[in-house]
Amino acid sequence: MNYADRYFLQHYSTTAEVGLYSFGYNIAMVLNLIVTAVQMAWPAQMFAIAKKAGAEQHFSKILTYYVTILGFIGLAFSVLAPEALVIMTTPHFHRACTVVPLVALSYIFAGTMYMTNTGLETQNKVKYMAPIIVVSAALNLGLNYLLIPPYGMMGAAFATLTSYLFLAVVNTAVNLHFWYIPYEYNRIAKIALAWGLIYGTSLLTRMPNVWLSGLLKLLLLGTYPLLLYVFRFYKDRELTRAQQVFQSGWSRVCAWRAGA
Image (cartoon, rainbow, N blue to C red; front, side):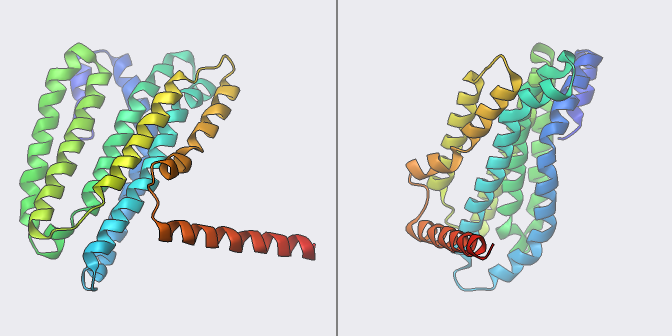
């Protein structure tokens, strides 16, 4: 699912297309470092939480917070990729930015799949994981075969995104069959809406000066928590906690300035 698309691109497209796709893919693959780190640490935490009362609510909140943070990181890579490539590379590589958001979303779905694997892991039903992964891999190969000849590297990116989305959805559904977790789908949908609005707006933010364009996009990324607030994403206790943290931090800054 990670590397088969290169072989299809090599066969049906050009070496230059393979290089561009690999370059853009590797930018978004930084997310995989985060996903892998969480994947390694998560099982121990998952089994510990599973033993507690109200474990279902804990798992639900953790997934929401995980998608919120990982989604923002993926959004930042997607929004800033064009300016980063202009600054760091020659014009030949600039087109690689087009695959970054699709690959970033793919790894967000991969991370979601690991985080929702509670039912199979805790109920000792991991035997169901193999057929899900095999079918997802077969879907990936089929989509590569269908999409890469007409669409090149964009076809490869869409094949990767679709197969990881399929893997996340099916794996989550199977896990819920063995242990139902009331995930906060409404809040996750609001994250997706904010993600789409900010990325769509970034496509319209084109300035002649690459540094100015990058600055505007950084400001645009800063609207992520504000949009979530407008969409009523935050719960009252989260807003209260955020206010307490802000007041505590501001008090320390004031005390430090007074002492200085």
